[in-house]
Amino acid sequence: MSNETEDAAQVSSVQAAEAEAAHFISTDVDLQIAGEDDKEMTPLNDAVRSFPFDVVKDLSSKEVCMRCIFRLFGVQVPDFSLSQPSILNNFLGEQTDSVKQLEDTEPKSCSICLGVLQFAYCDDKERSAKKESANDLAVTIADLVKKEGYQIDSFSLEVSLPPIISENENMAWSYVKNKYGSELRFQERSLSNRIYAKEALKSALANPLETLLFCRMSSVSSFRIRLTYTHAKATKTVQNFIERNEGCKRRKVGTENGLDSVKDGSVSTSEANTITQRSSDGLLDNNSSEVYDLPLEKVNEPCRLECLFNRTPIYFGGRYLKYSRNVSQTRWIIDDERMGEASIEEIIAGNILPICRGDNYKFHAAGREDIDVRMLGSGRPFLVEIQNAHQVPSELFVKEIETKINNLENRLIRVKNLKVVGSEGWTLMREGESEKQKQYTALVWISRSLQDEDLQSISSIKEMQILQRTPIRVLHRRSPLDREKIIHWINIEKIAGSSQYFLLHLCTQAGTYIKEFVHGDLGRTNPSIGSILGCRAEILQLDVTEVKMDCFLDE
Image 1 (cartoon, rainbow, N blue to C red):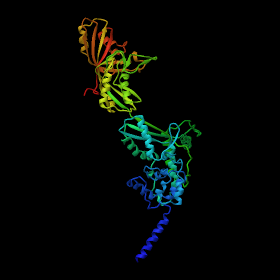
Image 2: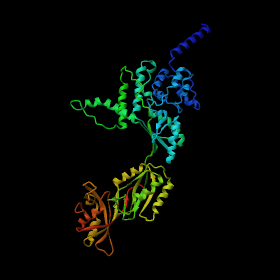
Image 3: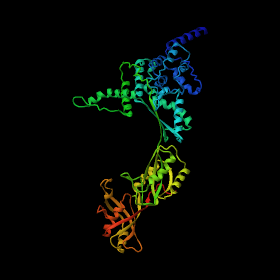
């Protein structure tokens, strides 16, 4: 065959192929987007070459935005504005009547994403806003983070969308599958290829947010950015959809006459997501030839966007000593009257919270002492939980906080070994609480003179088991239970010049009621010091001298 004949045959073959694929986007499209890196555009270029132009045109005419069209077929669009009509010319090549028609069909509000991926929304003051690109939206978010004054070294991004968007995605795919599913080009495409709106938005915002906030996005970050999109009309639509699709099922499992009542009330977002996903999955598995029509119910108003920031709690661990017999562990109010002159939690947490610029705090300790009991020795372990801290103080700054607390004028308490700790602080506290022992010193009076044999009988006690019913003084707030506790050892120290007063030193299992162990609580604690000595015994003063736990000790 001559070269001329071969060339003619080749031209004829090319022309035939072009005619057969007229409804596809041109295979020689060169995606050159101004300002975009060629390497970034290459995957998108390859993907768009296989796009069915007639389907793109069909969906666009149904008020589906270009970003939703792309992600419906599993293509993540780089960060540039698809809301500008001229961008279609870059994708679709030379200007043609069809392209011009598509340029005019980019909807004001997408019938699938409700404008979310067009970066349109209403703010908390119900003012409408529309950004040109994900980068513009990221600038708004980053400015809010900086305005709130958060100190961050990483962030996680969470997105919550109205359930109807997921339903819209499924219906759009069903529409394409049922209308074009018999064509060969759709045989290898499946629902699993698509990119969900939530992931598309997160992906579009990730890089610009990292650049603007000067840190990396991480799923395990303690600082969370949460974008919550809501839509009143969309929520009502989903509610009606759920009631419609669940009604028959409820009647089947209802009363004998099949008339089971359906309770009124709202459905949570998670419930709606689950039900709509299950219903839509069943719809997609349906082999019916019915074509689900588009557009979906038109929602002209954009979603309301609420942008919230939150840091997971940070913890300060340490040990406290209490020198006053008029300071409670936590704030104590009875009938609007404050008990005691102060509380440990207010002194410690009240000095930490302003430094961290947190929203609130919680105070946790390894047990508690009564307001009239001092805490001595190496102190009692505690944790201060700061919620949504804007700042995390350095180790040096934490030491300055400790010094400030210890130098307060009233000197009611003292803090030792204060430090920022992770979740392991909880572990140390919980492990120690179940095994810890406590040591006490009590000033005791008895109704007769103390004898030498009393000293011997008391000091010989080792690992003695006692039974305590819930004390009368706490019965109003504690369950009436019988508790078995261990007295590990006891010593008596005489007080010079007194035969009826002495110091009682003892070591007990955690949770032992010491005051009741001394006086017996009308027989509710047995044995007791009073029953052992065979006389009346009263406790006058009590100090905790040691809480034997390994956490937050001197290093």
